[in-house]
Amino acid sequence: MPLSVSVRDLNFTVVAEPLTPAAFRPFGDVVQNPRPDILPSPSHTTESLRAAISPPLAHPPVVANQGTAIKYPQVSQPRDLYAQARSRRPSLPQTSIFQCAARRLSGPAGNQFPVAVLERHPFTTQMFCPLGADDAAASARYLVVVAPSGPPGEADAGLPVPQDGEGLPGRGLPDVQRLKAFVATGAQAVTYSAGTWHAPMVALGREGTALDFVVTQFANGVGDEDCQEVVFDGRGRGAVVVEVPRALTGQIALGPRL
Image (tube, rainbow, N blue to C red):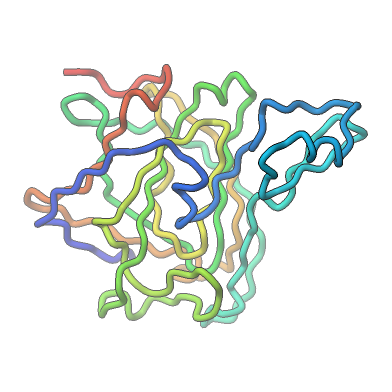
């Protein structure tokens, strides 16, 4: 059962920014090729490849597949914290495909997304990886909306969260006024850290189109241990809105200009 968070007295608009690993770090990982300009070659060795990259990468490359591939290891670390769940029910790794229809944007310029729901997965990371070849990845765009946790309160007292683990947000409903939004390309995947509040996936594009994602996480089948949801109550004039700059969307279509 989702919790209701009142935004009736709040008119909050955040402008989406480009998705980068540094900007997203408080919320999780951006998974992307750190050096797409360097292609696999049989002439590479791991040592020569690393020597050619300056400054050194956080995930040093390794030559793989008989010189036909470059491997960047450990670009995102899955976390399974279900051992701390109160049900003690063990988790299993889950791999799913989400086909996400392009969302209809609103507002005078047809570039606004009203945020109505945020969710979090308190005991697991969750990775969304868009599917597509190079040509599809070049044009695909999706919106990533996240928020840090605010201070704990009576409203979230019953929600289970892990107690031990570095970097966990712990209790607290989303801090709406610190909400952030990012526009990602089809060449970028995102991993939400355990406990990160985030909107359901928002694919951008023409009405009637969709973007496919492979989604990996852990789950144990216990509702409020797998997923917790808040719904924004904006009755009156309150609203939480993300504005999507057209400059970040490439050639894809947003809503009509009025």
